[in-house]
Length: 109
Image (cartoon, rainbow, N blue to C red; front, side, top):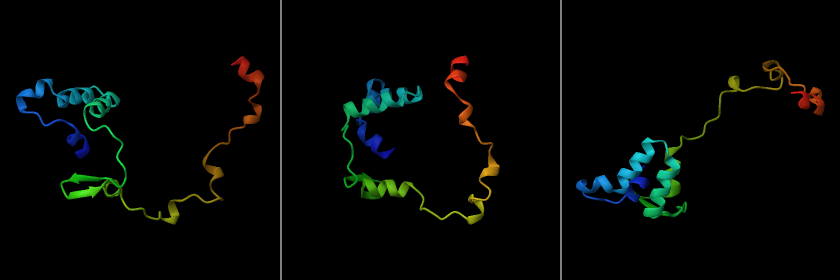
């Protein structure tokens, strides 16, 4: 979110009616995310960020990689009782028999 905000121009409040921020907001509310991001890329910096590039954040300058790592929880090992083992895997589903699907069956369908 902070990177997107940085890409929008800082215009006076009176200019909001014709600003990129308004267009971006409208596109996002219509669910046109791709178009909204294209607008920002066209008018803003528009470059792919390197993992080692430094970005300004509320916590001070940080690398893109550090920002992404902070957004994801640390990995954990799941408890053994929720994992499937080889003994009970087959009882969870009915096997599909692909051998009976022939060209003739497909043509008739």
